[in-house]
Amino acid sequence: MAVPQLYYFTIRGFGEYIRLLFLDNGIKFEDIRYQYGGKEWEDVKKTMIFGQMPTLKYDGKEIAQTGAIMRHLARVHNLNGSNEEEATFLDMFFEGVRDVRMKYVRYIYMDEGTRDDIVNKTLPESLANLEKLFKIHSGDFIIGNKVNYADYILFEELDVYHTLDAHILDKFPALKAFWEKMWKRPNLKAYLEKRAADKFHNFIQKIKKIPEDIRYNIGGEEWPEVKKNMIFGQLPALKQNGQEIAQTGAIMHLNGSNEEEATFLDMFFEGVRDSRMKYLRFIYFDEETRENLVQKTLPEHLANFEKLFKIHSGDFIIGNKTNFADYFPQLYYFDLRGFGEYIRLLFLDNKIEFEDIRYNIGGEEWPEVKKNMIFGQMPALKHNGQEIAQTGAIMRHLARVHNLNGSNEEEATFLDMFFEGVRDSRMKYVRFIYFDEETRENLVQKTLPEHLANFEKLFKMHSGDFIIGNKTNYADYILFEELDVYHHLDSKILDKFPSLKAFWEIMWKRPNLKAYLEKRAADRVFINAIEKGLD
Image 1 (cartoon, one colour):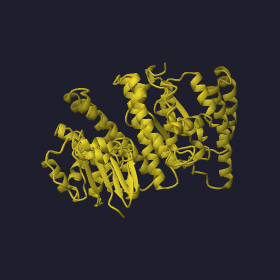
Image 2: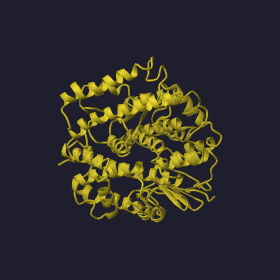
Image 3: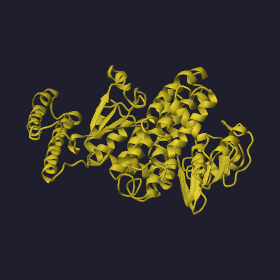
Image 4: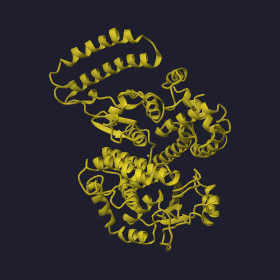
């Protein structure tokens, strides 16, 4: 197996999570670093998939997007938990820490808030949530006493916050103990001590080349040249064995104790689904009045369920044990499209029954509900007693459960990379909508087309109607939704990208989506929490 190559700048940043994972697990790699702003990077950037880093190259493959790289390495090196529940928990934790990271980044790069505010209010509020999550699984690490990939982002971010304030972890004993243990890890200790001695907090001031740890000066001349050969034109990147990498609901299985009970549950399940369809036709297609639904249609169904439910005495459908028919996934989000829409589209297109629980973003209910959410935010998915937060974690969980994650590790990694790439593009749009960081003209004429050009190139790597051939996978839903949003901004924005435009048109015609999409457009459902971008 060839040595993986990680491409990033000569700073810690997003690339550091990947470096720590490699080092701690004794995985040899080349740490290729470029100086940010240097001539090298400008040239190399043109060759990267998304024009950014980190990027990983090995075995002839290139993977961009930090999360995609970390989850790929986790699956390959057994750092992803021991079952679906643990994998989902790690994904949720990783995404939660990344959210906290963005608050720090906005302070560092955009001067959002004072140092006092971030140290005494913003970060402690987030750390309180992470402390609570950390305690769910007893042990030294996020999941018991074995390190997994999310431990590296957690450790790195705690270490960064510790540089801001040496006492910031004192009120969070579980996180502080974890941070101290990570510092003592045999394969990390010497590296961390040298990193600290070199004042390697945000930028490297002194560094000696580490064998197979290829680093570039963030403003040096090398990076622009290297960038040309990167899938997304970014770092970190990993190359190994000819592969280059850059940029990831439980199944209904509680089915009674015998054939009779299984048949009864199946019958009950299908009956409830019929009832659900009556409700959906009211919600999405205006097929009857609210009064008729509440006074006649639903009571007729409920009377049947009441009669059936009484057949088996107990708290649940079959006695005192829950079974699959007791559950539907519950999706919690605001009454707008936003991040929740990717999940709704996945459910609808694949005929997965779910409860679409929506809150008014300025209403009285949300502040109370927020107190009970893991990270105090939505979307959130509740199913089979499990609560999952973070859009990416929810989508990847559903992908694994419902066979929407490709057919092998290579495809799963490609989909993860594509998903994260589209999410990066989404953030450029969000900054226009909410923060006025650029003009509409610049967004439509320059920023978005640059991203769309990368997606067009990636899309063509696999022939077919969708991202991976002729079968939809979970990343297709974020791509479609974002293309539809950009089409709202400018109806001609997809004209220069024939593959993406054809995909967008095909998705609009999907049998399980068409009526929903047409009604959504007719109702002018808000894309964002404000009306900007709809005109």
